[in-house]
Length: 275
Image: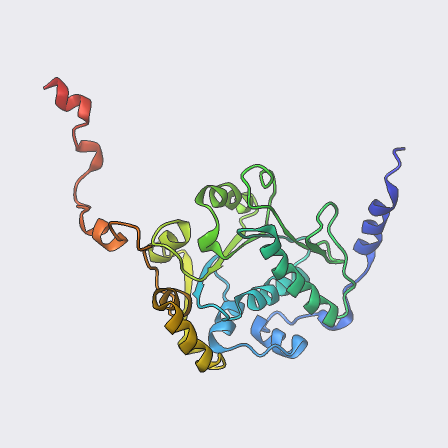
């Protein structure tokens, strides 16, 4: 028999353990209620909406310092605890950024009485006794291929490359899984912007700005506004603003498009030359 080593048997031991008894959650209990009772995390109204959303696809567009990392960490941990054998995958512009969310989930898990263990081969991860795991994958079209996920979390989605999102989004296909996107807006392009402004009813959209965060220091906000008014609008009022070096913005281009024209009926250049 092949020598599987101590790592393998450590994982078997972890899987055989039971979750701390106080982690059972009544089916009718909302995630926001669980968070407040079990973690002493008191969500705002918008944060509670994120925690309690049951939609398969959710997109959160919110300001800086809103608490999206903490809120999604709570939501991910709750699902990992209450549903066994879940693969919850996190991707961000950098693996380190994704690791911040995992670190937050680990801190909450410790508060609940769990011992911190890593998923096999995954340094940035949290393995739970019920077989569920939360782990990060690299922002790459190569290293992320082949994973499957019950939940795919895209942190700072406006900074994630379109081609990378196209590579990782199929993770949930076979599992009929969920996709949670969250970000502060950036440019008027990319999958995050397109999904947010799209008409697909399958996406549950949650919008929050600085008006929903009265706890942020108003003096600090005034300083940020004076430093860079455009970035202030982007970071705290969640406006999708085109960079100053672009000739056209998205609204101008959209106004040039006639949606009543069938693009397949427009003569191609080689057809025009032959006439």
